[in-house]
Amino acid sequence: MGLEIERIPTFGDNYTYLVICDETREAAVIDAPEAEPVVRRVEATGAVVKKILSTHHHPDHSLANPELAKRYQVPVYGHHSDAARLPGFSDGVDEGDTVHVGRQAARVLFIPSHTMGHVAYVFDEAKALFSGDMLFAAGCGRLFEGDAQMMYDALCKKLAALPDDMRVFCGHEYTE
Image (cartoon, rainbow, N blue to C red; front, side, top):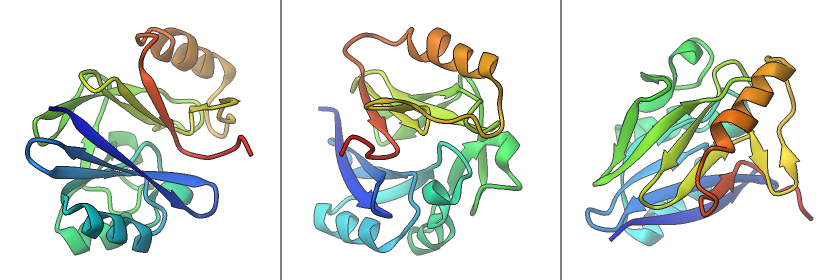
């Protein structure tokens, strides 16, 4: 048993994810800028949404948080420093914290540079990394709030240390 990962196209070039524990059917929504595509996918899968996980505060990753949190009566997780900036924020996370989706566990990596409160969620057992806007198929995200040293540390020390067979689920489709 493991983690079912549903990729949901949103905003034209964004990816939102619905991650579902195979055993319990409990799910988390990751980085949702719009609600309707998420609701349709949740209904199609029969998943039970238990939380919303945000990698960072940018609206193209978080705008639907309040609507989805209200609809499913669930908390919204993000880096504790984004409490005032992340729509719907209710629960803060930081480096080394663990969040559970059913029986699946994700550890939190604090990887500031694209934004100062950027995190990634690493499901080690499922070999799945949800990197938000830090990693893409053709590169990495831009520096909006951090500096080059922060980007280097995030990419070359934390993310590069993950196993080679880790699957990367990025926040945008930029390869077309």
